[in-house]
Structure formats: C-alpha cells, structure tokens
Image (tube, rainbow, N blue to C red; front, side):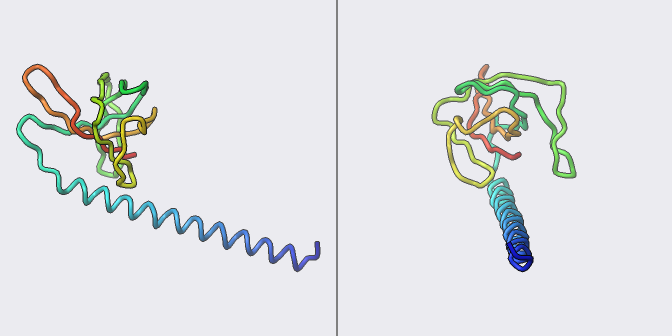
Amino acid sequence: MSKRNKIVIIILIITIAVTAALSVRIFQQRADKQQSDAEKTIVLENGQSFVFAKIIAAIGNEISYVIVEEQENGGYQETQEEGQLQIPVGTEVITKLGTSTTFSRLANGDVIKLLMQQTQDVEEVIKIWIVD
C-alpha cells in the first residue's frame, strides 16, 4: 500500500468513528428527553408510589433487587435494602428509548423505576421504566 492510500484509510476511519460517536450522543439525548417527558405526565393516585431499584437477578418474571436512591448528579446510590417481587404478566416495561416491551427485557444490573400500587395487604407492580 502506498503512503497516500494509508493516509486516506486513516482519515476515513477517523471520520466514521467521529460520525458514530456523534450519532450515539444525539440518540442518547433524544432518549433522555423522551424519558423525562414521559415522567412529567405521571400523576400518582391514592396508594401509588415510585421505587427505584437495581436488579440483582432476573429469572422469568421474578426479580431480586436492591433499592437505589436517585442522586442530584443524575446517578443512583445503592442502599442496604433488598427485595424480591414477581412482575405480573402483561406489565408494561418502558425502555430507555421510550419503547414499550415486557419484563423479558429486564436484565441484571438494570436500574428501574417501579410504579407500585398498595391495595390492602398486597403491593403490586403497575408499570416499569428502565432508567439506566
């Protein structure tokens, strides 16, 4: 290969890498905006609450999790509180990109926002958002 061809290939690779990085950043910004727009429209009803959690294990529709607290810098801090729950079949799960899916999309390490409904002695999952 001539020196000129090597330079052209290097410039092409750099251009592709920069374009890919910018595309990913724009995609993330759009997803963050969609997620924040969706969060603004939710009004909690009587007996409902939000819980932020990091999934430790997900097997079928059962998950083990640790409660996390949302930080001012946008991150999440794990607490010592752990729990387990069974997600009802048909529960809507919203991905970071704003698409609706099922609990099969949940994976170990996902930080999720749970909309919980307390009815008498039972606390049930109503909706889930994957936030990180």
